[in-house]
Length: 97
Image (cartoon, rainbow, N blue to C red; front, side):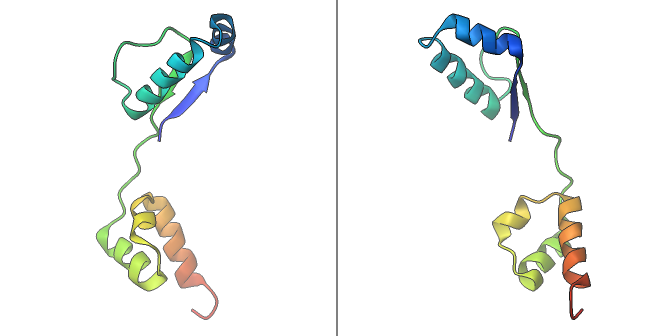
């Protein structure tokens, strides 16, 4: 998911533009969150950045998190490698292990 940051100058611009224009600007921001290359660029003050890509979870680890730990496949698919390793480590280091 992209992160949107409105700097102070952008907020002032939105206030100056008024309530008729703000929904159009916010619609453009949503479009840019979905596809940063979409359409014409907005005037300065709004930065849309995509988070760095996550390292993929190896199949063997995903299988263990799903079948041994009992996680839902969708949640495992959303994990980065470091998160997955931390969850597996916590599971195998838990009480009674």
